Amino acid sequence: MKFHTSLLLTENEKTILDLLRKKGVLSFTDISMHSGISRTSLYKPIRDLERRKFVVTEKRGRDRIVISKNINSKISEPSSKEITILNEQDYLEVMYGTPHIGKGDRVYWLQPSLALESVLKSQHISNITDLNKKILQSKCIMDGILESDYYDVYRRMVGEINFKKAAQSLLGRPYEIHISRQPLREKKEVIIFPTYAIAFDWHTKTGIRSRSKVFIDLCKSYFDSIKRESRKVDVSEMLKSFLV
Image 1 (cartoon, rainbow, N blue to C red):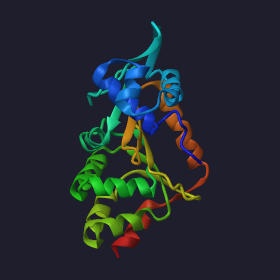
Image 2: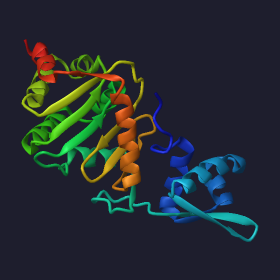
Image 3: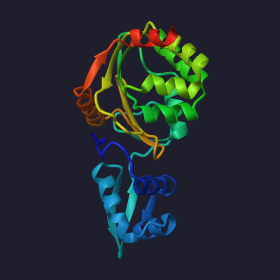
């Protein structure tokens, strides 16, 4: 199953939003000149961005201008109407800072193995272990979807010793983990916190964060559609088998 197109950005959409983030307002002609995207190829991504309320357009003279809307590069907690566009560094700061979670909160996390590989290439294992410890201390409930080779990939990427240390930090947490019955073959991950959701694409290294109910519901709907095609596992028993 492919990720819903309204959650993530195409290369052209990312380029357009990056330009608008710097300039605020640009004509179609200016966007084409600065981006190298032909004018005829601009219509679909801009129309899709406008439909999803990232931008607004209006006619001025012979040209049409594009105005950025609700695009904020700050990593502060998003307001109910704010859409935050995340680059790789933004995403890592959000995820490996202090998560906004507490006792009894349920966090939904879909992380395919290809996304895990990207995380492990960009983030030191000690930071990942620290995050896992924070999650353990928070006593939140992790409701996750993984692929069958997830922990094999993890162990191969970080080495046996580091993996065993990481596995220890995963034990003892309230879990509800499902393994996808079909290979996902995606570099996209989805995390749904109690008050906001994040969708991040490691292929384009771009993501979206918002506390909009529409966006959260869309992420949850995608998560649930994968979960229905998955099987529940005892993750503690799985991890213990790696620690023998």
